[in-house]
Length: 470
Ligand SMILES: Cc1cc2nc3c(=O)[nH]c(=O)nc-3n(C[C@H](O)[C@H](O)[C@H](O)COP(=O)(O)OP(=O)(O)OC[C@H]3O[C@@H](n4cnc5c(N)ncnc54)[C@H](O)[C@@H]3O)c2cc1C
Image (cartoon, rainbow, N blue to C red; front, side):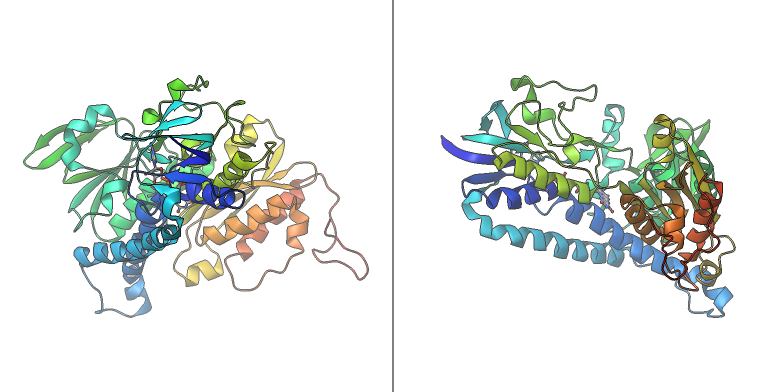
């Protein structure tokens, strides 16, 4: 049986970065993956979804044409076949790049799935291998409730959606987390008839009650959103009948966006004697990614903590580093940053409203909105609201939730300020150009500075020889 220093199960983002780290220390390693290569992000995730959103937003811009006086140039219906072909061609470029990057791995790659036999042995079907250390990086997959599997001919998830040759006339989107709202809104902007169903109002992962309400109002202008229980009733004439709150709709397809689940089921974890939490995820140390004292590490979506790309990449590096280290080291997480690419963007950075409440932090909220903000009005994107949370004592920035035009950029600025432990008054001493969307942040930051218990400085800039920035 072939013996390696390290085996990595899964060649997604976490597996790739784990490999890069392991390869610095040993040449005796292997990555195994029996699935479709190219990573979830490039194949069926971040990249094709953003490609579709870009087309949808460009098409949607024509809703402003009458106001601009550019009438009679409107296109009524996109060529859906061409839209999907464009999305796939970009997707193929991104995933092709990943696959080309793996060509140099040669004997370091086995295109098979792995399953634990014991802590050091993996069953690859027709062969077994051994490794001193093993990294689990098997990702996550869309959740499909068992009761609906009989309707599978009509069900789409993100693994199948981007393969559609053309788009259905009427579609239901079940779930409006980041994936559901991104794709649901994009489809609606492409003139597809969309009905969206959610059990409770937490669109895009927002936790702040005020922003949840605002987001619901904002997206309801474009989407038919039903909140409450919902179900698939029956198949009828090649369509599906669905219901929510006593009303029914008939749709061609359903896009299931009700969350993703870690891929753990067929890994044989029961052979390891590791403890599992209530969701069936092995208990592991979040700072080292090690499972107890076992020679096994778990990185990326599969560990269920922060299922987004840059976190999967970081975790792969940590797991790869620790799998080759004589002593396991612990690493700090970056400041949380989540972006949903709806229009307006939905973003959460630092501690969410729910985190602050749960941790009983004494905080103040600075608010701003985009309804009358100059640049947003010029752009025809004057919908949005930002809440920034600051420490009640000293105005130190703790977190933010927002639904905002170009929120992706605002969220980065605030995440970086939070990571640098800046106070509201420190950020106010930074330059704000005019007219930009960032100017709106000032209103919220000023409100935090005012509400905090810190003495107020007369100006937001420093006198010669002194600095108001801590
Ligand atoms: C539609 C969509 C949009 C998204 N948009 C964003 C975004 O905008 N920004 C963002 O940050 N994140 C986004 N994400 C999330 C991001 O794509 C994931 O967090 C990231 O891809 C996870 O990487 P990973 O390495 O953990 O898993 P993956 O890339 O899924 O890799 C797991 C690998 O493990 C393999 N595998 C599974 N089981 C076995 C086994 N038993 N043996 C061997 N191999 C196995 C699989 O074949 C797969 O190749 C999006 C996801 C989706 C679905």
